[in-house]
Image 1 (cartoon, rainbow, N blue to C red):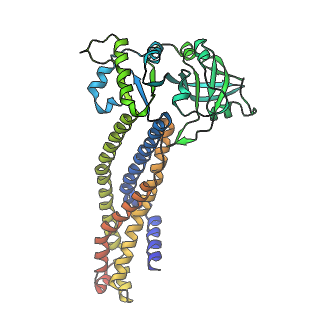
Image 2 (image 1 turned 30 degrees about the horizontal axis):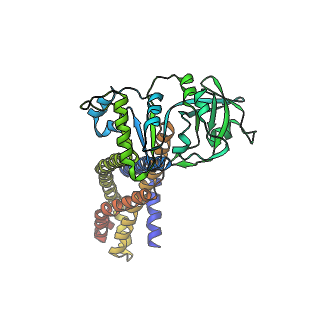
Image 3 (image 1 turned 90 degrees about the vertical axis):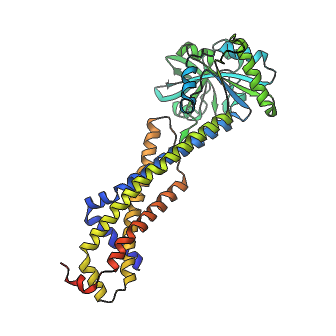
Length: 409
């Protein structure tokens, strides 16, 4: 009962001094909010990157013009790579015809566009221009229809394979959208397939896309810009040999001399994962001291406010001691109040942190996911802040002399 009584008194204090309460809890709220928001975004990105690697398979590597992650890991190399020539569909065909270590080779590019059909609009769809081999590299199980075939690419046919959510929202009155028209970039495309519901990963929806032949994509959005070339190794145990072969052939294709710098990038799923893990670890490492400062400041403010509360309630403590309250009871009461105040700030920070991460994910490509351990970390940290910084005010209250306390006005 002493526990619930202490919590009740603390909550009454919150309601009775709203501005002082807000200022008291601000440090805890900001610190916990920062932890939750950053962890949610990084955790969501971790899951998303892992799922992308899983979708493509560990036997797949990418040949591209630049490696965007080098912006964070090797800025000079990134700047140098900006001078690399664009990779084209002819580069993909060159590798496909000559590689002996590859199971298949695909090329792709993407942009964001609005899709329209039958008076309905689906905004912000990822429209991907791909070759017919994409279904052999990525996990894209069909619910209806078929995937792209070589004839679609050769004839620049205006056909599309839609993601599950795009098809459902554009054609809500039709159980079978196959053969219907959808406008992409001002041109009409015929729906030939619908991919199964792939759900969400880390808050990123994996059903909001459309696949069209790369040649048709280039007619709609322009042929300028580099492609990504995906190579699936014929044998996972010979993945390195496949990368070496692709590098050798691309150097020949680009007429590079033996000592000239390679003007393209070959990256594997493991490399991407390792680079991303390094980035996320660095973010976590920087987060700890920054949030620690905020929480310590919040703890100091909490201690000062509790000291003010002890001074304000000196007569109350004297009355309780005169009626027989033990030193331990007074100590326990003020400790419970401090921890309750700190936990209220922690809970508020957790809720605001999740809300902030969700808003950021809506306004940017960053996915977010709720990590259960981050909630426990936030609550545990604020509990410790309340316990540590509430000890001195509680000890001071418990040490008051009852006679002097009763004289206090």
